[in-house]
Amino acid sequence: MNMILNIINVIYWNVNPGFTVWIFHPRWYGLLFAGSFIVGYLLMEKFLKWEKKDLKFLESLTIYMVVGTVIGARLGHCLFYEPAFYLSHPLEILMIWKGGLASHGAAIGILIALWFAVKKYKNISYIWLLDRIVIVVALAGSFIRLGNFFNSEIYGVQTSMPWAVVFQSVDNVPRHPVQLYEAICYLAIFFFLFFYYKKRKENTRPGFIFGMFLILVFTARFIIEFWKEHQAAFTLPLGLDMGLVLSIPFIIAGLIIVIWSYRKNKVKQK
Image (cartoon, rainbow, N blue to C red):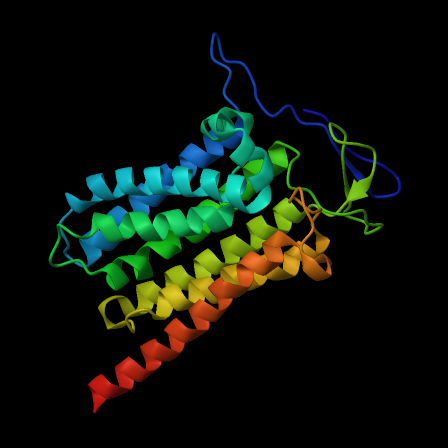
């Protein structure tokens, strides 16, 4: 590991994305990705215990979450960011070890997977699950962006800011460490949602936490996109970035869900 802060406050980042332990060669990204599921499992276990729900649900939920996240993130990257390449080389879609996961695709994959996960459990509704799972997802997002930082990927545009980072495996250009920007934002969103939930638990407005998650996470993502290098292999009309365009529907959906949550709660109070 070689991180040096020089006299002009530029951080030189040249960390090996993996390390060796005996015959194993783990990568930081993989460890953080797996760690996010382990921590998420423990958190969801607490939520289920606090609200006296069936703990057996957690086993099938974990499988659905892993499958939905990986498939959604992979297809999202292939179809949103490099459709021309992957549609002409479909077998490359299966080669996930080569890299390429998209958070917007993961969000869609998770939403679909959770819908299937709750079908067998009458005392767990889809909206109840979404309100709890997004707390876990916010923390997982922070873990994953730290993994991107270790991999020197999804980096920012050039900057002269004193915290600029030179990713030496990429080039010698000082850049915005947007991976850390996102990691910090997602961690803050996690704490906000967690303590809101912990204070209210059963008395939370159905859909409110889910809606706030969509608004906060994708607004943060939308803003940070302005400092991020373009990831798509093509240019959208008006020079818009794919990450910007994909964030807008989620923000709008979040606003609609929060409004619906408030109105539904008012009807119940009457």
